[in-house]
Length: 143
Image 1: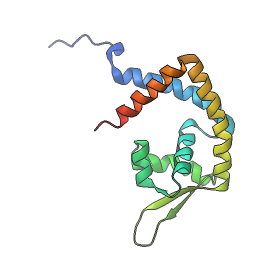
Image 2: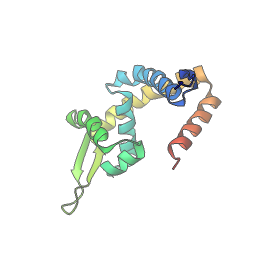
Image 3: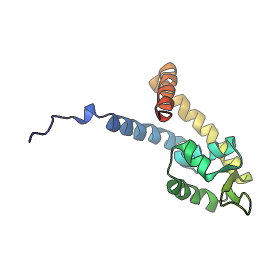
Image 4: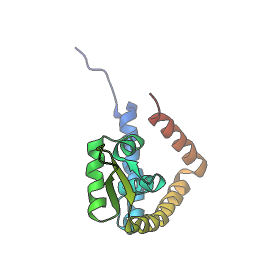
């Protein structure tokens, strides 16, 4: 039995993961100045856009497993940036909101995020960056 002659250069997953690490490192360098990680920033921004979003809705929107989301939210809750409240007694659904400290942190991190955006678009090209975002969002909406 012969093994096909495959190269990591032919692997879509490898290329996407490598690019994701590169972009994550760039954004981490900036938003960490506000005391959050790039992943935490995206969660704060998503909750800010939809106050009262449930864990299930947020997990779906972020394309994350619910257990992964719970682990990611723990430090944000511990640090008082995100509040989780049971919606009502008849359901286990938990609604998420930013606290005052969460809104302040998001504001500070947003300034750093803008710098990361500027740096990325300066290196990659503004138009190419827009096309890339569009393609990636299309990819995550495939069914």
